[in-house]
Amino acid sequence: MLAVAVTVLAVVTLAVTAFGNDRSSSSPLAGAPASAPVTSAPPEPQVLATVGNLRIQSPVAQGGVTAVGFHSSADGSLTLQPVGPQANEGLLARLWQRITGSTRRGFAWYQLEGGALRTLDVGAVAGTDVYSPVDGTVVSIREQVISGRTMGSQIELQPSSAPSLVVTLDNVSPDPALSVGANVAAGSSKLGSVVNVASVEKQALAAYAPDRGNNVAIEVFPSATLDDVP
Image (cartoon, rainbow, N blue to C red; front, side, top):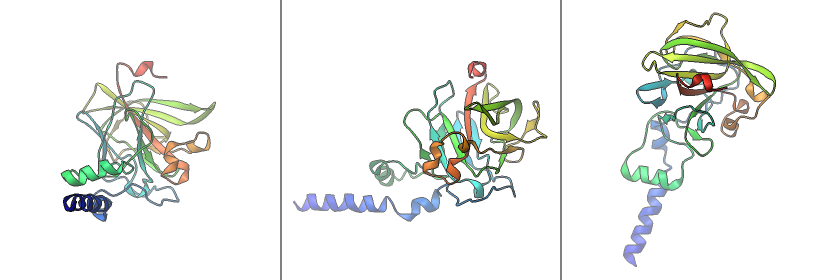
């Protein structure tokens, strides 16, 4: 009985410490209480996800990121590997990470639904500046239509480190100076600003972010199949 009691006490202690402050200090939650668009500075280099050797940096300045979320997609986009801990993972998963010492650093992220993680939503207040998440070239700027209304554009980038892929950004009002064929640099080339897509479509990120979950949505496609995506 004593052994059982000691085991139970150890499990309870680990469960409590699994929610300690050291996790959040080394892996800060994305969730800035932004109430106005952030347009003062570009983002610092901060990788949010990877696909093979492709590193996807935050397209929004850290002070303007309201939340980071991943969810599935019905189309042919590739699975993303988040960088950082999952903020809404279960207790057992957090306990196991504490036991094994496998705590991950970076922006904490939310899983917005089940299935493969194919879409990265970077929350930001509408009007916030959006920068390129990769080094590469602009290959397309096309209108984004939601519920019969034009809501900004979808911008397609061919990353220089993975030319067989295309990175798409949705919910962006493109900068007037941006053009197809332009070379862009991660974190320093401005693509445009966040549109108020939440005004016409409910956003899954709204459960974790202010401004009704407005966001920049990022996906990665094999370039050979992108023409088949509506």
